[in-house]
Image (cartoon, rainbow, N blue to C red; front, side):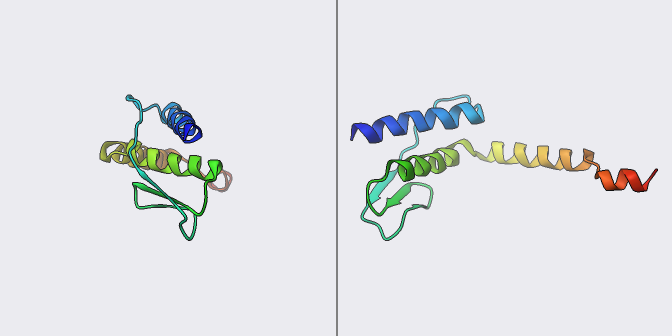
Length: 98
């Protein structure tokens, strides 16, 4: 159990650091051991065939990421992508327009 708690804490800190979320992440979820396959089911369940620290950490990343992706963040990322797509120029186009 301590291994899971430690992985949870460190994984949430990594997601927090990478996505610069203003608040600490403490997503709540259920871990199902003995599942048919390893996967994140929905947004709040991590299914594992057996205890696997790497797969657990990956599941925590996905669940924590869902917490980071609020409607505001999704909208901000989409707007930023639209802005960048309008400012990007293909090098081939530059060569053709010389």
